[in-house]
Image (cartoon, rainbow, N blue to C red):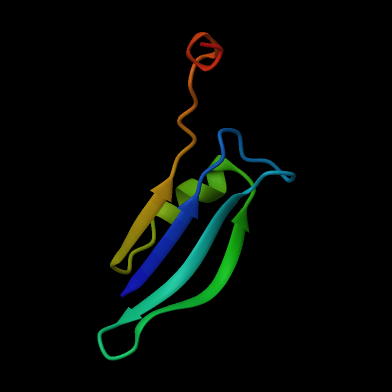
Amino acid sequence: MKIFGINFNCSPSQKKPITIAVCDFKKSQNLSVLKVEPIYGLKEFDAFLKQKDPWFAGVNFPLGQPNIFVKK
């Protein structure tokens, strides 16, 4: 099965792409990282999400705090 580790930036761009670790899981061999791919925009990310094969992903979203909470 395909497993993806996704580091999602708040505004993907050439400088800060969405980074995807493409992995393969097999019971006999555990988890293997095959490659790391950058995705530079939301249209590319949307196409990535529409893959037909079965897959599972762990996603790191940027959940920032408002300044009022950070300053206290």
